[in-house]
Every structure is written in C-alpha cells, then in structure tokens.
Image (cartoon, rainbow, N blue to C red):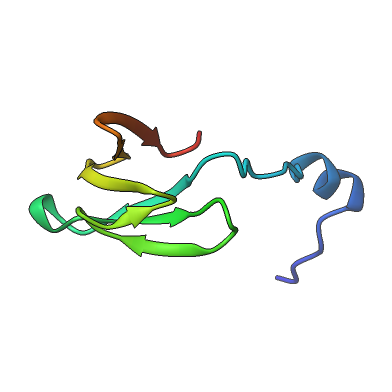
Length: 85
C-alpha cells in the first residue's frame, strides 16, 4: 500500500510554532531511576545540558529531581520547574 503525504492545510493545522521561554530554565526531560535521576534542561542562554543533584543551572543549584520536575535553590529558596504540557 502506498503512503501519501499530509495535505498542507492539515499539516499547518497540526503544527503550532511557539517561542520557548528564555526568562527561566526549561525542563525538557528526566531520565534515570530513583536516586540516580538526571534532567535535561534548556538554560536561559539557549544551551541544553544534562544535570544532576548538586549541579548549577543559571545560578541556582539542583536540589531535587522527581519523575516530572526538578527543584532549583537560590539564596535559600527552592523553585520547582515541571515538564511543559
């Protein structure tokens, strides 16, 4: 059976362009298990980096990594960053 391409109007409707926020780090993914988790983060400067607990991201320290979020601590306050919907 031959496959046909997607009609342009369908492709345009199904594809949405949206700018990524650059005002804060963006969590792209979490990988690993339990105590050995790491996260893939898009930093404010546009670079993507794999990080673990104790690493620094844009001046904040990674203090926790859950299945779908990471906690960054700066000046004694922690902020959770979750995977985008």
